[in-house]
Length: 506
Image (tube, rainbow, N blue to C red):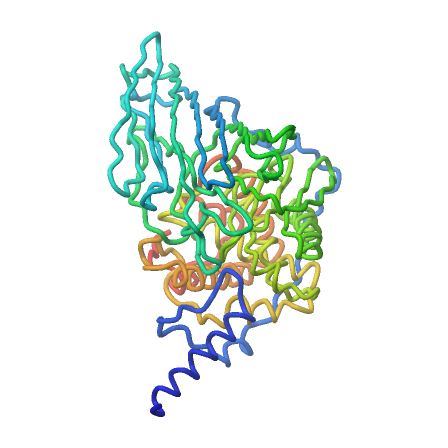
């Protein structure tokens, strides 16, 4: 064996060791020239500022404008027959939607990410009813297309409603433990089935512009969904346990869930799941985990409770009635409304210490209930809007509960990956998630750190509360973000923006 080959093997081995000890959803890109650790950068990272929690004692939810979601959201109902042992499901979906725009609609448009994986999605039937007219037929869905346009039998005028029924099947594909999101969000492992992006989801309608669509690209979170009210019923084998947000209970293999103002609904299922539950402040928490991971499952519940308490103080009241944490079977964490899924890698490697990626990732995904859930954004073209604040929330969690580990957080969650590129990258800026996530997330965390430093804690946290309250139950843009910043800071943001963004005219 030549010396050159030996050096290559040694470098590969060292990178593997770093991967195993340093990150759960942020492995080092194996072919990126930026993956070399910058040892001096960790030492130069300024220490974090202590969190100053705004005094919100005695403030009732009624004091927050927009605390309740809109009352005219589309109603989505799923009836799922899950054949767990055969690894497929048959679904009947209904959609009741009002044309709340001032435009006339001739179609209604959905996004179906699971169809991107060949052989995973079969569209069986589509039926549309409105104003006494109906239309049956199956619109074409070719190859790996994810956008489904459903034509209407007649024009849907402003204020009128449509009822759509969709029948489809999903054949679950095997998921590897090394798969990154979005690959593997829907699939099966030996221990469980995970259904993340598994159904036709409404896309946003833009007043005067039409239905907002995009080209599916398997990087990051390639979705952008409006709020909907969702009811989910899953019928499966009696020994299978189903985890989702907004649980209404179960009986004889029938599991029922309801989530209002949802950006997306997911479920995981396993005959092996164990569960611990508790309530605080009328919020129901549930943690689903595999039998060998009971300690980590309990810790995940503790972290979620602590995160909700902290982030409710920092950002505003928790947006929902419950939160479900479920151990998944691939290499990533994912957020859904009232539910988060956490990679089994974090459970397997948890050793009982606070400097754990399990703790960081549960805090991160819990923060998404504010940044993604209550305050939405286009995760395709402006993913930094939710990920910057969710990722930085990990640091805020450690600052408040484990301040002795903030330097560890910067080193192991950010600096080890030597982030590069602009914060305002789109998912199309990167070929793979394992390039995109370490770089964009890390740069976004540094941007939020520096923004907080120049604003000062008082103005920074006042901005976050105002931003969240102003845009709760809507979707934001980068311009909205900086407009909110400037309402609390009159200094020059130009140098900061130039340092981190490709666009400089915010």
